[in-house]
Image (tube, rainbow, N blue to C red):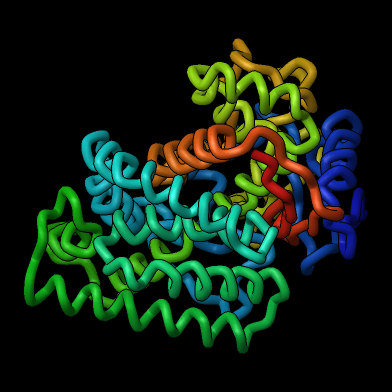
Length: 390
């Protein structure tokens, strides 16, 4: 099969985005031999259409490129409807407006304390400190884990995702088993002492039924294991990109500091501009022709959200930061369709809280060296070192 592009060995976000820009114009359904071969959709309308057509573009064969090196499948991400639906419904029940507002209300003071620790600490990497600990605190509150679990979750999830990016199956397994132990403990604890299913994911999953029967206990464990890590992948990258942007655009930093009412709109534009996903994937349930190319079942198709969110047909001047974009609601930072991020309202709140904290807690940010790019399936920077000027 013809190879239309390659990014193997070059994860610089600027390089990747330039490649996607070229593909949008000349080859919007492109193929690469990277990672065993996959298709890439780069136009906004194509990505959105694929994400919303769960009958044609299915998730049960391959949902991420590169995928788990051990081939493990967990609900709801790796399942199709109707099998995925009760798991998603149970998790969504615990992320209603009141619950999210409660978590975010607790997160504000936590964020300010973490930022002060970062400023006073020896590690200038904002991604691996503030950027990782903040979502870990949010995840622990959502799952009702003890506070002592927060540093463990931050470090374990980071090591797991790093091993995934390296395709280090042995380390992926080791770190994953640590999280499975916690997921199994959550299930056992909630079986013996159930909590409110509106505020506790494990209790909600245990109370859910599919065709009148309780969900399979091991699949519940798998869903909780996935929940432990899924919210720990994107926020550190996005927070790192935001900090990098503010450091290189001090006028915007000053504007947001002087006008904090602009922060919600700024956070949404940052989510569009620095969407960290390029490897979420599907396979087609039947042979499918698109833009003159034929995609066959079993061939992974990546929905390159990062490319879709810079499509100039939807977002004029797509590489620029623009407050109050008229089309901002069209961004795909949290996906679309049945597999849209179940925790998107909490994730959006985490990013807003981080931005508020960084802007209020610094007059200026100074980069200390070049940032380190992350790897597939994400896009962005996994290490951003800065000095905080206050």
